[in-house]
Every structure is written in structure tokens, then in C-alpha cells.
Length: 325
Ligand code: R5P
Image (cartoon, rainbow, N blue to C red):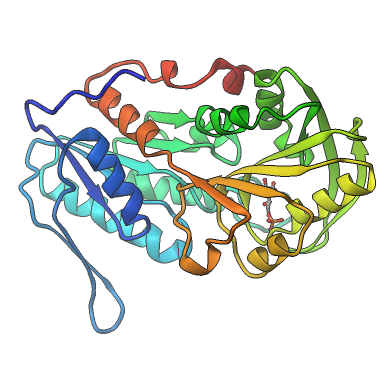
């Protein structure tokens, strides 16, 4: 990755919502610019209070906010920040969404259900965002929900580099469901190894059931790849089934650590040797268990922000295997 040069013209401003301050600070550090001064508060009745305390007139403004837990608060805070930046005469506003929540509600899979991912995209555009920068969307097609330019990054280089150093022999990459095949195939291509697929049925929002395993995992070291882990049901059930089918060590590489409800307990008691995640979502102290390794995507996001600001290509930032898988 080319070295980020020091800002000369100061026309870029980086602001952050309250969802992931550590990541925002690290991005600012990599860009060698200060994080913008923003008041993020609450009025007594709970309404969100925001004030951008720096002059951003005519600036290229990037607002970092993961729409993770609590998703509704974080989305609303993002919308209000965008509105404040627009009314403060920012030249261009980019919503930087390391994790885009509600992404799993991207289609009508049952009668009379909403497409909430599209609703959230509409809200972000209506609030005044001119661009979106995001990473490892649940489904690539969600880019089309925004009628503004979307730069979609992949964390495969960051996660893949870490896995590479483990020098795992006799490796098979596993997708824990049919929907994740494309992403898993990217890793299988990168490591030039086989791919196996777990045929999973979802019983409820937190329970899943493994029906079959497609492909061979017997006597192989396994890396399960997924875009997000919520309650951990999909991952832990997949790992159990893989063990039953003769897998050796089981690792999991999952981009967005949502880690809701029983997730930590499930991982702790599971056969999984190590779960590798990114800092697209921060880990609260009780989630920082030994089995979880968190890798930073701050450099990747900083480099993308720098390139957007200077109208440089973004595609050179990620391995083609992620895109063409
Ligand atoms: C499903 O399509 C996703 O990629 C994840 O596999 C799933 O949403 C994870 O949810 P949970 O951890 O609650 O099983």
C-alpha cells in the first residue's frame, strides 16, 4: 500500500459518530489529520444532539459510523451528522460505513416484510450523503440500493495475510451457508485450496440446523469464512458438523463481529480454535476473549479515503480474487 502523504491543503475533514471511536481515531492517525471536533450528546428526553464545532465550509467531509448495536441509534446519529454537515456547507459528504447494518433485510423473502436495507440506504441519501464507502456488504448487490457512488472494500487482504502466516497445511475453506459461497470462493482462490459448503436451515433468528456438508473436510484444517457473526448459531453449528465429518483444527474468519445475545458463550464452549474478526465493530471488554483475534482495517479505510479525496483508483486496494470469485 503506498504511504499516505501528509495533507497539504487541509481540504479533507474526518468526523466520527459514536459507534466506533477507536477505529475513527486510528483512521485519522493513518491519514495524519486530526479527527474533527463534534459534539455528540443527548437531550434530556433522548433525542440526539449534534454540533460540528470545526468550520467545514467547502470541505470534503468523511463521516465514520458503523451502524452496529444499537443500530437504530447509530443510524439516526449518522443521518443527523450528515444533515449537520450539509447545512454547514460541506462541499462533499461521504458516509464511511465500516459495517452496514440491516443488510440481511435485503429482499422480500416472506410476504409482507420490508426491505429495510433499501430503506436505510434511502435515508442516508436523503439526509445528504454524496458517496458511500463501505466494506464487505452482506450482499454485493446492496451497492445498487444507493443512487450515489458506492466504494465497496474487501477485508480479504487484511484477514488473508493473517491466515497466511499460520501456514496451515491441508486446508479447506468452508462457507457456512449457500449465500456465502462467493466470499468463501475468494479465499479458496487466494489459498489455492478446496471449498466446502454447509447446507444450513435457519430455525429462528438465533437457531440454525445443519442439513449436509457439500465437499470433503476429513482430516483437513478448516477455515470458515463469513461476512458477519450475530448470535453465533450458524458458526457453532457448522463447526460441530464439520468436526463430526472428520475436520481437524477449525478456524473462523468473519469480517463483522456483531456478537449478539449468546454469541460469546457459544464461541467459548465451541470446537472453534480461533475466531478472527476485524474492528469494523468495536469489541466491548466482555467480548475480548482469548479465542477472538481482532485485526484492524484502519489502514485500508484510510487509504481508500485518501484515494477518494484525490480521485485515485480504489480497485487497486483489494485482491482481484475477492471480486472475481
Ligand atoms: C447469513 O446469511 C450471514 O452471513 C450469517 O451467517 C448469519 O447471519 C449469522 O447469524 P448468526 O450468527 O446469528 O447465526
